[in-house]
Length: 168
Length: 168
DNA sequence: TTGAACTTTCAAAAGAAAATGAAAGAGGCG
DNA sequence: CGCCTCTTTCATTTTCTTTTGAAAGTTCAA
Image (cartoon, rainbow over all chains, first blue to last red):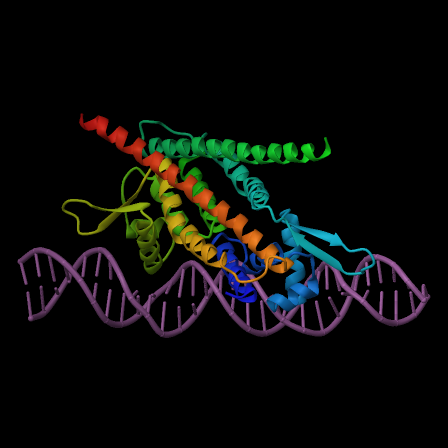
């Protein structure tokens, strides 16, 4: 398989994976493109490679930067902004985990805690079923929260451990 | 908080969580409703509780059954079909993990394996960057695959372990 | 201060996904 | 069979997302 073809296929697969995960297709494609490129790209490069408009490019790049998955890079002597993606997939995974936890898990845990306090008699089977469901989900959510925290922490300490060695 | 209110809030939160995960809102809401109800509900009950049409109810219930999250229940002497959801959230989680792995991870692993075989000289930095990215992602995907498998297995053996005790 | 080179915004258009409801189908009972 | 009850399908409509591109904004060198 030729490089160009392989690249195109990767971008398209990563795009549809992203779509299934509630991330928009273009955002995932830009990320894929940047992961696969050795050097930073400009907005125009991205527009050209993916055939998308300037506005679309700008919006999605900005969102990727918010997620911490892409960085702005300034090339000395150039006016344009360039962009690169983190290439270490483990770091990508922990960034995503951290971000989704913050956006999704934290709020639902808050809600679940509130829902625990529903009034009513445990002899009423509706109340009983509700309480038990919520309690189970709540316990699960807390465990998931812990698991994500240790995943993110593990990665951080691996990162700093490795980084530190370089400066010793 | 009153039960009805708490129920409504749970259904709505679960629905938007689902939406962020690429599962459609109604499907997640039906699932939430069934998780919280002590007894099986009919299609008409679901329609009434969630204010959705018959067709919509039917489609989404069917999809939940495909995912293994909801079961059809026949109540003796009744013509209608009734539905219940698995109430053990760990089982729900493993069902979802199993299903998403099958639908998403397995295909991307297949693609990644193919993309490893891109032609070209490693001295070309484009080729090099591409290969390295794909290799990293591929390794990650395989590790994720293993992790999911052991999660699913762990749950299965816990389940059979517990089940077996009941019949000893 | 001007204007060239870029970036950002946002209203409108296009596109995708989900919901509706009427019609067709399935199964069973007398 | 003919009727009744319930389920499934699917063309159409509605709603929600994404994309576009032109206009406004920013920055900086001359």
